[in-house]
Image (cartoon, rainbow, N blue to C red; front, side, top):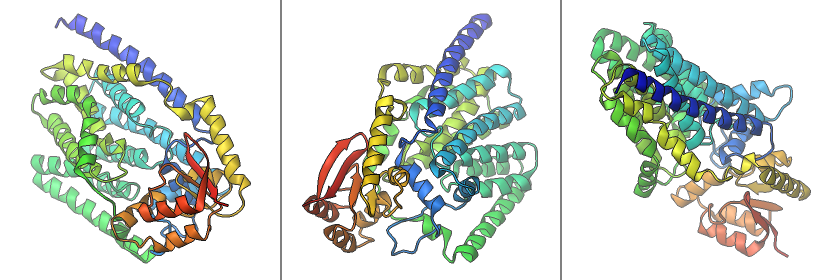
Length: 443
């Protein structure tokens, strides 16, 4: 293609993508201060940030299978009062912007140019804003990615010890962020075995020091906490793979990179991100965030392809399927950005608040905003029950005794069939809406 024509096409696509990203980002920012549930993760993270015991004992009905650092950050922000959900949302938004800045800085270190960097940033932003609800959502995933991009930048600037430290710290923010450190180790070993071994040893030492500090501080093993039981299935994996249509064009594009050290890094990172993402996606409850590493890896590769790959036109067109998907599928289904869902959530919070006594909420944020304590981790306790690790009888007895004055559930069988049967027997549905079913004690 004629270079001038290519530039015209590329900047036209980037302009449309930029306007779309700006619109979606504005929409997400406007939702941050609202008391509307964006995702069950929000209330769960907020509840642990507020909890007196960050890692509850095994007999508790709450489970914490995340590393501790993000909870301490939220606690620090709300120490003089404040809403942990809203604080977590602002952190996630800042982390999204920080991740974008990290991508730009890494590409600059790899001798990237302005149009390639713009392509990378807009592809990354489009994947996250169109394919997920994590931008401005209370969850530590993006904070971990932002820190890892800073670690990669330091590695490219030949500061392996500090880079290894940041990579280790990032794993104590979110434990599934393995693709970038793994790819970085392999990449460095292939280029310079001595430097690679040094980096690996520093990273291992920092990670082990963190595990020892956790054991001493909490009296339990972090790895044991992270290994909370959950069901896995091939159906989960195939369903996740079916949602990776956005990676096809950029995947083909970066396959045409001329082999050099930058292309090697991007290829190793993309391969690790895809493999680990699919492995994680086989588990119940795993969301689009399992493939954020893949989105970052492909965005880095797209930038290199724009500047010197065999098929730069594919790189330029990589964002078009995302824009087409948005145009076809977006039909006001993002309830938390609508006035009607905000009004419905306000009514649901008022309903929970009007029932004195304990509540069981699948969407814990609703209970927190209603002044209720988090009583049961519905997802993790449900997974423990369905994997046979936990006996449901005590919870069945609590339901039968009407311990909870009100329940909010998306699925009445999410805690297993025995608990579901007890709920149907001892509670009646008051109303059902976008926030699930609300139940009160049966007469």
